[in-house]
Amino acid sequence: MPMQSLKSVGLIEKDKYLAFELNKTPYALSISSVKEIMEYIQVDPIPMSPDFIIGAINLRGDVIPVFDLSVRLGKPEQPCTNRTCIIIAECIYNENPIVIGLKVDMVTKVIDISQSDIDDVPSIGGQFQSRFVYGLAKLEDKILTILNILRILTLNNQELVEALSQSEDELQHIDDALTTTGSEVIDGHD
Image (cartoon, rainbow, N blue to C red; front, side, top):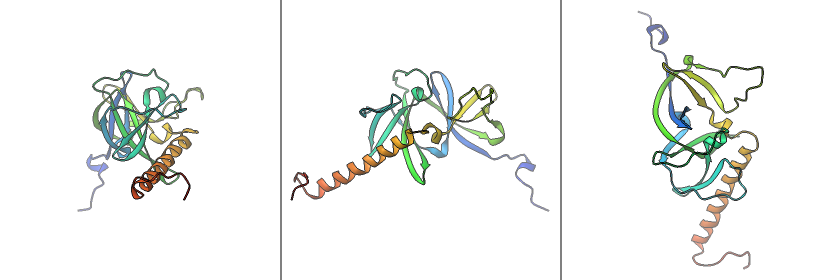
């Protein structure tokens, strides 16, 4: 008996997505870009950063920039509640992994969505900006906007995040140097 394809026996491959809310609107990210979900913690501000970058956190020794995803998507900033959390996400840019935190109002669930249920954003004569959107998923009771993590870092913002990552490497190098030299002060003099 010949083997049948998955589609011919009614099994359609589905991808997993992390669903969350911003301003009472549902969104999702591919679960493959999500490293972890954490409760909202104190975020240290970064001077002169764009308004959508809240600051940075120290996550197990790594400095991670945190985006306010509502502000990044052009929505009003939302106050923190006991359900506010940070999604730690990773994407690849210029063959380098970039890790960022995304502040969201709440994470709701992990869902399976087949590629056939995801449509492109409809074009409205080129007047609609959808650069952050991967696609629109048709669910039973609603449409779910799936975001593209790499596009959230578009334009000069990728350079900003890369600079933050480089600063993290420099800080780690200085920290390592201080650790190996004991209590000596490194000031560039012998």
